[in-house]
Length: 507
Ligand code: C2O
Ligand code: CU
Image 1 (cartoon, helix red, strand yellow):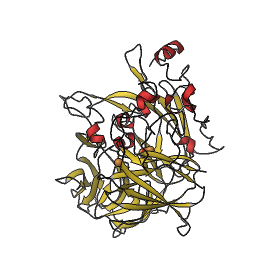
Image 2: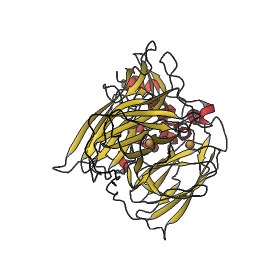
Image 3: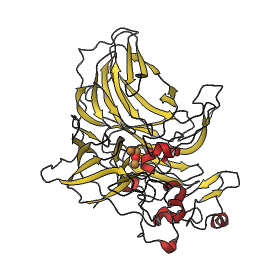
Image 4: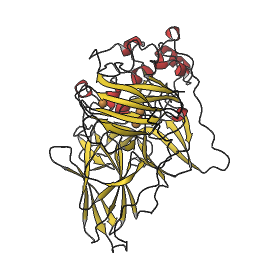
């Protein structure tokens, strides 16, 4: 990737304040011109240094367009984006206590960053362009370093133009081990996603107004671990199997179940739960479910992971018991070690309403115009470099949080936080879905407890993303113990990118 010369940049993007390859617009949210800037300077922290003697896992994540054969020939390879030349999703495994040091190299033609979904990390490592760090421009790199405090099943993804960057495949899985009190015989990751591909393998529009304004624009090619459904693998006969299910799609809500054996839920969004037998579980975009099950004792026995949230149940994965049966005592699902979260103080908790609604003006906003027009720059090699304005703003707003569509109407500055929370206090967000759609609502930097719902019996559980049904009022509680500015948004990415996003400040 060629780097822009200073002259090219100045001539091409007068309205943008990017100089000499350094993101000086870091303190000017949305790439606005200095004259109209009213946002205070924001100094973005660099990655913390792991202490002497720390055990560090180093990974290189090279965000880049690559060719991936998603559809079988005669369809061509698809113009995907990924973090590694190795096909498939990047999978990073750590032991609890280890540090992750991840060097993101941006070899894309647009800026990017990495958000570590579900990890309670220092704010500066949260990977939200403008809010917690400067966007990582083409040709630049950025190093993330943190020590995940919790075990579990997590993932990571970019946080601007997410609908396209994740739509093309840019995401990875992060597993923090160390929660098993009794080791399982197999630990299997199942990451689901759809692809918006045309029959010839090329990508279709990642986002449509119709989809963004309704349930989202669905992909046409369903995959588990990068292969067409159902994913197939062997299980050790009679073994204890840990299944980590991740819904990494940007749109699709699933209702998962297991056939062929009993399965027990042992963690929700990576957070341990007293094992409870799985009937079915709704898994919206970004949600994870860890299951424990006993593989059939007879070689050849089948276990299927199903999605019942469709006209006809869909087999997502099919496992076959293989080999001589392992000698195991009768199956009792073993609990994981509990998470180490600050205790909720519900008696003194402050209630905060969070209303999900349609945006008041349901259509085209002046976002890109107000910020100086789409800042696309044609590079010598034909690539189009897209900068802040056109990436982090959307021309349309359909959704809002507490009446505010992100970004606010003027787009002149970062909007104010939706909530200012006092560090250490317990808060109850009362999420009130006044729309006719479901929304998987995600909080950054914190793990919450889903307490109850106005419209359904809820199993209280810990989560970082929770599905809220139409007309449902759902209460979630958490201790605001992580200082900084944290996003709260819908994880149907088209909803997020058309207004259903805001942030809260913990200080
Ligand atoms: Cu996985 Cu702000 O998102
Ligand atoms: Cu939504």
